[in-house]
Length: 245
Image (tube, rainbow, N blue to C red; front, side):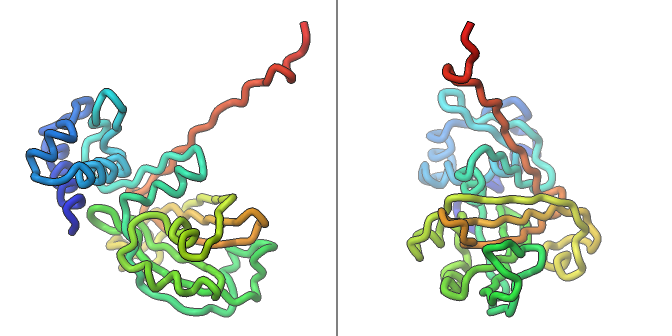
């Protein structure tokens, strides 16, 4: 376990024990650095992990406030842009389990830019937080990008952002679908839950400017470890769209 994970776990335990209740502010970054003998980077990574679990909320000029008592590990994903979809993995690491070339793509991932008969390189892994695994994830990429799997063990952060750096590609669009399911027996063993446990499945297609698929993915989360929140804003009419009086 890394330093930031140890710190995040200690803070989570303190929240669960009532040392800091809902509505209370955590110590400042400087105070945490001094108390635990760690760097500011470590403190910020730990706070980010707690924020991803939905336990705290950080506001500039105010501080980090406890917003939910610690209980089950839950990954709260708030989204209003492509950047937020990618950044929500920053406090997690990826543990590679399997990889290999597959003759066709999972039927649920078929799109016009990704025909079912086209070979794909596939890899599977666990997305892990501070404690138990958050999800089991399957990824499909072009065989040209198969070497991506070599640098994935223990990788922290977005895989498609890593792909952009390695292969000089650029993400322009993400399509996402979320649905409910029950966890299979094989998934249950990996996720340390009972088979049949309710789960959420996210399917994502990451595309470049030409609409070509960079990565297609399926991630399965036990329902108590993940929630998805989206912020929507109404577009206000511009001056040229406003009827003249």
